[in-house]
Image 1 (spheres, rainbow, N blue to C red):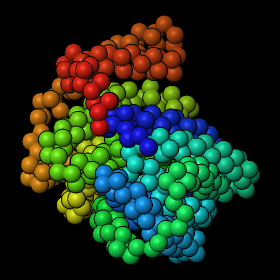
Image 2: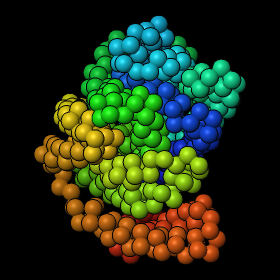
Image 3: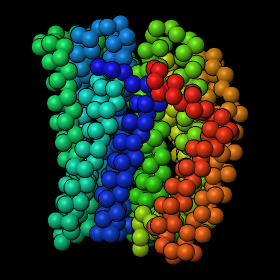
Image 4: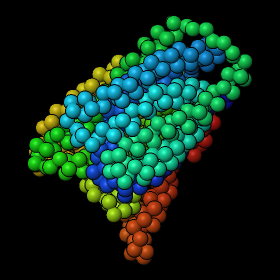
Length: 511
């Protein structure tokens, strides 16, 4: 199977991710129209808890990806299938256990976290997803380890289409019974989508096994031990990161009550933060996650083969790609928060200011993701976890202090997120510098993209105002001005020589 370069793999996963997010709007938009901010609030309350359980198992597919990449580097394909067998056993236990906990302990969990009791149906709806997604992630880890991102990308699109069809369909079907039932039906869409995406990946995996004529695979406890040794620290890191979202679901509604809001008002504000602003923020994060997913197996292979110069080259490319994505996205969502929110959620666009200020955290979130992937790919599992733990503590403290204050309320959660990720990104860069002895060129990586983004943004704002005056259409003005900005920004990236044309061509061709 042909391997893909970092840029090519990132483009494939990034394009699939953007399309998936776009399809996700067909899931989110009708939901908001059907059940409003209150219903979205019930849906979002269960989601971080589900993601927390998923995060506990998230190290396994990363470990699979890393181990298969290393075995592939030494032409040990049978060893790759041994990794798959042992990880399947492990994920069966984790996935089944998670599903059972969420299903049978839904009411005690809601009582303990002091959520609105109507969130029960969403938690039940989403409880079936972990067992299905556990198997889906194994196959994604396998193909990512082979450094072929195409099957993973296609499965993401298939999964999201299934989620939209089943989730929205069930939400409409259950709406007559109440918005809480409708939110529960929407939550079940995650299970349906994952099942369809998983079936596609399984069919591709069977073809690879047939190609290599692998029939029976023996158990190898040593491989299982290696998977656990790699997966546990990574899972801890992802769990700490997910705890940041879980903190919002637990603390924010409670602390908003202390700020003087009613239970319904607190749910609505929480929905605007997590169900609208965060959803839009996650669109550029999809591109960064594509880089990280592509980066880990490539970095792992180079690191195990001790090619230090190539390692530095890949780190430099990854950090450049990170800032080239992060900075213009932050500029765009900050200055175009109102047009974007009105375009995506017409008639239900409350939460514009939340999106505007939350967008400032985008560069730090993306840098955190990329630097964590680099450290994990080079075998440094614990250090980024400790950095994330520090960020988590910062978030808890600031959320606890700021959200109950009337002058901050929901914006206290935004400040807490910004501060937490800023701290983690700085700590990761410092760790990377001393651990890998890599010196980052901040002018090339950071300053040049800032120059390009500033000029781009001026053209976008001017373009938006001119188009809006001529058409009076926010949607058309928004889309055309963003398209104009993308074209100008790509030209400026070349003009400022962040990436030159020959460098881009060579990086696409070479691994």
